[in-house]
Amino acid sequence: MAGLLLIAHAPLASALKAVAQHAFADCGVPLQALDVEPDTSPEDIEAQARALLQRLGVEEALVLTDVFGATPCNVAQRLGDAQRVRVIAGVNVPMLWRALCYAAEPLEALAARAVAGASQGVLQLPMPHNSVS
View 1 (cartoon, rainbow, N blue to C red):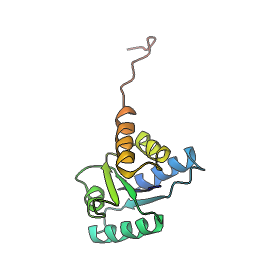
View 2: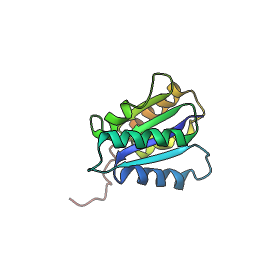
View 3: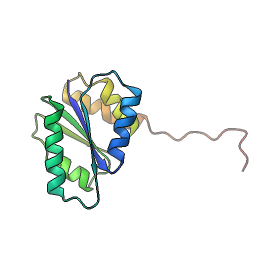
């Protein structure tokens, strides 16, 4: 089973972890969160992230970050080798829930399911017929 590490601008990572634990309290997937504060150096963030990866206690990890090109994502990209860690930017709740549900799958399949969950979970809803303009 892969572990999950959330790295995002504060307080998003902790909030997403709380949502995961609320919805899937007993799923047993190792999950850690790192809130990136604006005054923390990338080197310190990387050290914290590596420590959290170790704390997960798993051989493989899926790292979910908030924004491609921002510090959390840039740090996440430095974390792993091609075998052990996969990074996905653009985390949202459907992505996270999908990752929790399929954490037992191989890392590549898990990453694909997470990305599919993210995109399938974003949709524009129609306006109710009785709405007032």
